Length: 225
Image 1 (cartoon, rainbow, N blue to C red):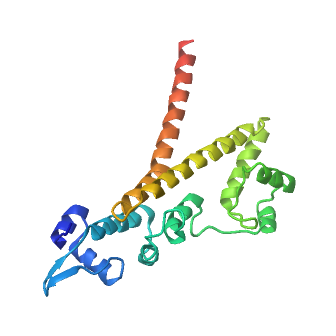
Image 2: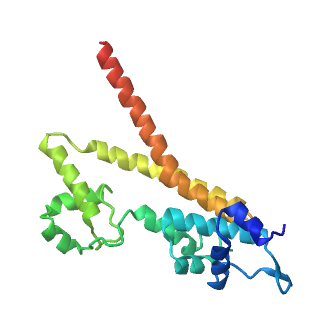
Image 3: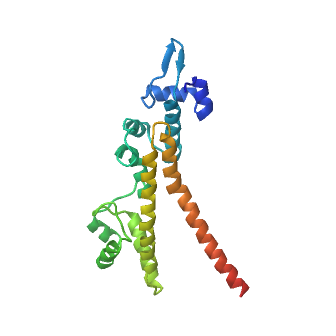
């Protein structure tokens, strides 16, 4: 289907000046030129504008990152490193300005017990992004474990978290496979919305609401005793 630029603006709520800017920057392909002042845009333009808008508003992706990703957009969701990079950066939950420590620096800076550190690594409660790359995130988990120890409770509950997290990650990988199976040039942005919304919206909503339901039920039963 072909569109006037005014129709693209109406369908995406992206200003004409922004769309033309995206074309100049190489984020969008050139329009089909019918006459010197008559241009038509395709479904590809529509889908890519939606993708660019989503990535900018929800992920904070830069023009250069998007441009590089779109150059590889015909690769699958699972094999395109440029497409998966914003997702992986978000999943790591490490701020861009975070301070990174080697293992030895981490132990010294946060006064970490070496034996405890190794145990938490073995139990996969601590999972630094690489063997020698630790941040405040890892320190916060160790603090949590020490709180358990302070009150005389084993941190078995965290091992259960690991078990269920692994099961959930397998389900999320299955979702990725299914999205790859149905991928085509017309559903490009929608598939990425499904990935991001499932991982960073639906997951939090479903988990927290179930926790709310369980705690509310326990509180209600306690009151009624």
